Image 1 (tube, one colour):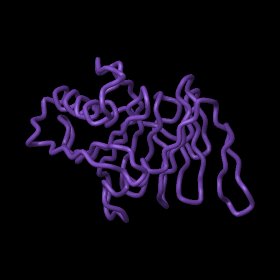
Image 2 (tube, helix red, strand yellow):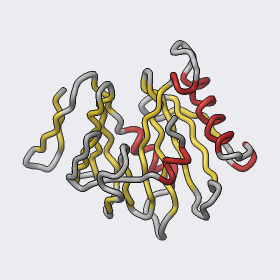
Image 3 (cartoon, helix red, strand yellow):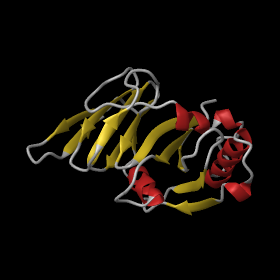
Length: 197
């Protein structure tokens, strides 16, 4: 299982760079992440002004430095948690949190968790902690998309930051769009992106 510890360690991105799994493009809002993995076609728009690729073509998931945060997006599966596909979103997200804190040997007191609802109506779970072996605080937001759990991690790497960490993660999660088919992205003259599926 790809763990959130790896989210904090394995990292990667581009600025119109492609790998087998994803592509990233500069967008009006910041950086557009497009994943066309078999069975998992999605896009996310990461807000910000300053971006730097990390580990291009060295890891299977997108990662980048964005406005003082180190960011990675990792899609897991409900099956990896040994949960029924019929389980509620909140139960699945709570299981994801338990798996990650158990793996990190972190007590709930040191990683306070909150289950809430994004503006788009999706249930999400958030928490923060300082993982073993690092001095940087990490912020996590996870939500379910059918058979997948999308985990977004942001680590403090620089000051100042224009956006509070969970506000930053929520704005990324709010932009999530998943398609059953491969996504093709184009831009109009105003610099706005459009996608076809």
